[in-house]
Image (cartoon, rainbow, N blue to C red):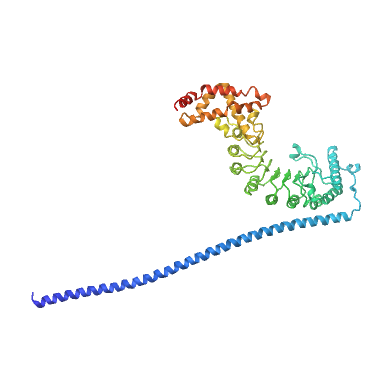
Length: 526
C-alpha cells in the first residue's frame, strides 16, 4: 500500500473517531440536560413533600381544634338538654301550682261533695248484682283514697277489682258512668293538692276500670309531676286507644322517679302506638321494669318489640311480654341477650309461641348467665325435647362437669317441668348459688352411690393420663365430709333421708376403689 493510501486510511479512521466522539459528546449534553430536568423535578417534589407535611401538620392542628369544638358542643348540648329538662319540670310544677291555687280558691272548707249513687240509678240498667257491687266498691274506694289524701295520709292508690284468669281473656270491667265523674274529680283534686314527694316509692293502679277521655282529662294533669314509682293500667277498655296511649305516655314523661310501667290487657292496636310507649320508656331516666302483657295483638310483631327493647341497651331489671303471640321466626335475639349476661333479673315470656329451637338456645344461654333470677316460659310450643333441654340447663346428670356447668341461680317456670327433680336440684335461692351447686353435686353422687357406680363413672369421666391423676384430690375435696356434711345437715327432713346418701358413705366408696393405687404409687415414688 502506498503512503498516500495509508495516510487516507488513517485520516478516515481519525474522522470516524471524531464523529463518534461528537456523538458521545452530544449524548452527554443530552444526558446532562435530562439530569438537570430530573434534578429540578426532584427539587419540586421535595418542595411538594414539604408542603404536604406542612398541610398534614395544619390538618392535625385543625382536627384537634375540631375535636375540642365537638367536645364543647357536646357539653353545651348536654347543658341545654339539662336546662330543657329543668324547664319542663318547672313548667309542670307551675301548672300544678296554678291548678292547686285554682282549686283552693274555690274551697273555704273542704268536704267530700260527690253524691252517693242512689239505688234508683240501677232501675233502668241491666246490670247484675256482682257488677253493681263492683261499681259501688269503686266509688267507695275513690272516696276513701280522696279522704285519706285530704287528711295527709299518703298511700299507694289502687282502684278496681284484682285480675283473675277470666279477665285476662276479656272479662268484666266497670264501665264509664257519668255518675262517677264527680268522684273522679274529687280524687284528681286530692292528688293535685298533695305534695309531689307524697307518692314517692308508691304505685298508681287502675285495673278493670274503663277510662274514657273524661276520666283521663281529670287524672292526667293531677298525676303530672307526682313521684309515683309504678304506673299500672290494666283492662281499661279505652274508647279511643290513641287517647289512652297518649295519657300513659304523658304521665310517664312527667313522672321523673317512675321505675315500672305496666300495661296489661290493653290492646295498643298499632305499631305507632307501641312506638310511642317504647320511646317514652327507653328515654326515661329511671324506668327499668316494663310489662306489656296481652297488649301486642293484631298485626303487631311482638318479637320486634322485644328486639327493640334489647337493642336499646337500657339496663332493664324486668321485661314482661306474656301472652303476646311472640315467636322468634328463627331469630336468636332472646338467647343472645341472655348469654350476654345483662343486669336483667326477671324475664316473662309465657303464653307465647316459642319453639324447641328457642328452648335449646335459651338453655345454652342460661349456662352463661349469672344475673337472671327468674324466667317464665309456660304455655309455649315446646315438645318434650324443648322442655328436656330447659331442664338440663338447671340439672344435667350426664357427668360431674355437666352438673357443675349448669345454671344454679335462675328459677324457671315451665309447665311442671321439674316435678321429677328433688328440691335440692331446683334453683330456689338465687342468692346462694354455690350451696345449690354443691347440693346438686352431692345429689348425683348419692344416686350413683346407690348403684355402686361412682368409681365406674369417675373412671369414665376422667382420662387415665398423668394430668387427670392430679384432679383426684380435687374430686375428693369436693365430697369431703366437712363441706358435704354442712349441706347434708341443712337439707329439709324429708330430703335428708331416702334420696340423699350420707357423705361418709360416698367418701368410703370413692376411697375404696378410685385411683387409690395410682395415688399411693405416685406418693411412694417421690
